[in-house]
Amino acid sequence: MVRIRVRRVAAGRRDNPSNETRAQRLKAVVRDRYGGPEVLELKEVPAPTAGPGEVLVRVRAVSINDWDWGLLVGDFVNRMLAGPLRPKFAILGSDIAGVVEAVGSGVEDLEIGDEVFGDLSGRWGGFAELVAAPRAALALKPAVMSFPQAAALPQAGALAVQGLIDRGEIRPGQSILINGAGGGVGTLGVQIARTFGVETTGVDSAAKLDVMRAAGYRHVIDYETEDFTRNGRRYDLILDVKTNRSPFAYLRALQPGGTYVTVGGSILRLLQLLVLSPVIRLASGKRLRIVSLELNKGLDYLSELFEAGKLRPVLDDLRPLSELPAAMKVFGAGRHKGKVVILLP
Ligand SMILES: NC(=O)c1ccc[n+]([C@@H]2O[C@H](COP(=O)([O-])OP(=O)(O)OC[C@H]3O[C@@H](n4cnc5c(N)ncnc54)[C@H](OP(=O)(O)O)[C@@H]3O)[C@@H](O)[C@H]2O)c1
Image (cartoon, rainbow, N blue to C red):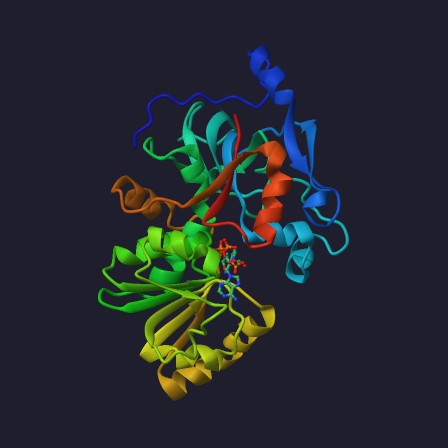
C-alpha cells in the first residue's frame, strides 16, 4: 500500500491537549511478583510514549497466550528470561490489535488512525489501554477483520503456519494430526491445513471436541479415553502443542517418512527430541522437529487467508480488561476454547 500523507507526532504531544490528557494515565493490568491470576491488579499507570522506530497503539483487543501464563506464574524458563526472583515486565500481553495513536521518529509508513495488529512478545505491555510497540512488530489489520479476530491471530497463527508449513512441509493429500487441537494453535492450524486438502484429526479433552469439529477437524480424539500413539493409526504429519511423551511414542504414530513437529511442551521431552532427532532420522527416515517461533512471520499470509474467507479465529468469551484475572484463571486451567480475547473500548 502506498502512503502519501505521513503525520508524525510524539506521544502525549503538546499541540493536542485532549490527546495529552488521555495519554498521561491509562488503565492497565499490572503485577509486581510472580503468582497466579490473583497477583494481577487493574491500576492507573503512566502512559507509555512512542520512541524512535515505535508506534503508540490504542489497544482495542488483546488475546492471552501460553507465554503470558508462563510469565505470570514464573515457570523456570520464563524466570530465566524475565527475572529469576522478581518479574522484569509488570504488564503482560503480547497479541494486540488496535489503532495507531502516535508514531515515533523514523516510522514513515504508518499514520494516526491506522488499524494494526501484531505480537509484542519480548516487550509485552498489551494488557493496557495504550502500548508502545516496535514498528516491525505491527501489520496493517484488514478492514474486514474485527479487532478481537486480529488479536487472536499473531502468535498462535504464526506457530501454526511455521509448524505446518515451514517445519512440517505440509502437502496435499496427507493425513495430519494436531495434538492440543482445541486451543489457539489447533483451531487456527486445522483451517490452515485444510487449505492444503489434507485429512485432519484433532486431539484434546472431551469438552472441546464440538468446537474442534466446528473449526474443521474431520476426526476428533478425546485424549482422556484414547491414546493416539497407541491406537494403530499413522499420520504423515503431526503438529503438537503439548509434547508430553517420549519421542518413540510419536514415531509409532508416524507413517514411513512422516514428520512430527512440536511447538512446545515439557522441557524434558523437548530436550529428548532435540538430542534424539538426528539419530532417529538416520535410523527410521522419520523427522522430529521443533519450531522456534519467528515473531510475526506469516501475518500477511494469515490476513490473506482471512480475506479469502478461509480462516476465522475461534473466540472464547470476550471480556473487558477488568476481567483479565478471571480470564487468566480459565486459561491457566485449560478450560478455554480457541482464543481468549480481552476487549477494550
Ligand atoms: N516454539 C516457540 O518458540 C513457542 C513460542 C510461544 C509459545 N509456544 C508454545 O506454543 C503452545 C501454544 O499453544 P496454544 O496457543 O494452542 O495453547 P492453548 O490455547 O493453551 O491450547 C493447548 C490445548 O492443549 C490441550 N491439552 C492439554 N493437555 C493436553 C494433552 N495431554 N493432550 C492433548 N491436548 C492437551 C488444552 O486443553 P485441556 O487443558 O482441556 O486438555 C488446550 O486446548 C504452547 O505449548 C507454548 O509453550 C512455543
